[in-house]
Image 1 (cartoon, rainbow over the protein chains, first blue to last red):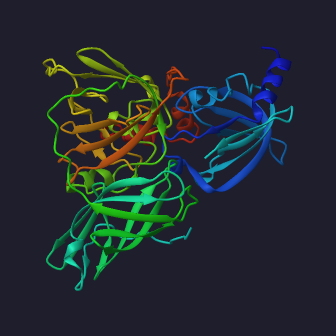
Image 2: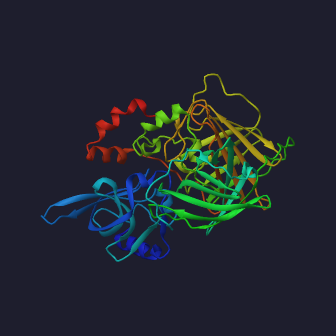
Length: 126
Length: 340
């Protein structure tokens, strides 16, 4: 799929797509349900596999360095039924992610929404 | 929604002097929040002046005064956040009725509502087999289940559970089967039922698990191993499918992590609605090694001809990588011997 085609499919499905978080792990064991955070960065790796889809995102820090964030979503089958596949977000994409914070200060987010370079916003409902 | 600051002790018997003895006994309770109703078994027992309550096999604090009753049920939402449903009601004309409020420290998707309870009497077993067509793909439906959080554990189970480390000790975070007891009550994933003369085959999307339910009364082969799916036999009692599963491997019951022993037996009773579009199940875990009374779960599914069972392979790499990044691998492997 070309980049252009991929972007078009993202736009086409964006209004309908709201993935529901799967419930086979305890989200509460890893995340804070009342604290959210928004980060902006570049996707450095896509892990589109069970037990959960993850996007690793490099975020620039104030001192000029970068730090890697682990952004967790649902399982692949939950996502693909809604048109969110392994090509929807790829390495190199500049994204803005809102998510629930991981416990213990980890650089870990459970995705609530993600804004793609073309302005498409994808959501995951809880 | 109210917020509470502490979790009360759930196993303390409540002392009351002026309680109506008619409150004692087994009740079928129904909660009506916004959305799908929740049903379950409420047991109220009395030993002298001590009263105890249990919902779906797990302890709940019960306060009774004359005809008034106050019940605090601990549960969890789909994400694992614990909250309480606080029921207040009264006995009128042989029925319990009242209202309930949701009390939680976390933000949960649950609403206040009304409740009622009628006397529970087990339905006599129907020896006349009248099989119904359960074949097809079934998608989980909301409601039904209390998701009672704490259970009435034996001292041995309490001792084991005291050392349980949530997340790191949960089998399926590392792509190991959570077992049929948890699977049948979890998740948003469909499953498919195939039928032949001597067996039913359940194909779960979750973890791509498969189980065979033998209807011909066969025994397991000698030395058949314990496993997450166990060895299942089924029979029709009227139009209800009753499945008994033995030879389960040690595992956990739910997010909280209470243990299941190899001597456990899981009983599932499946019922098809009159229109054939909804299937419900009552799932009871009999495991006296770990539970003083059997935990009960309830599920519902709707028939879904518009989907397929998707492949659902699991790779534990990301689980171990996270621990590697956080320097937790030594901790993890030092616990290997106690992990199922």
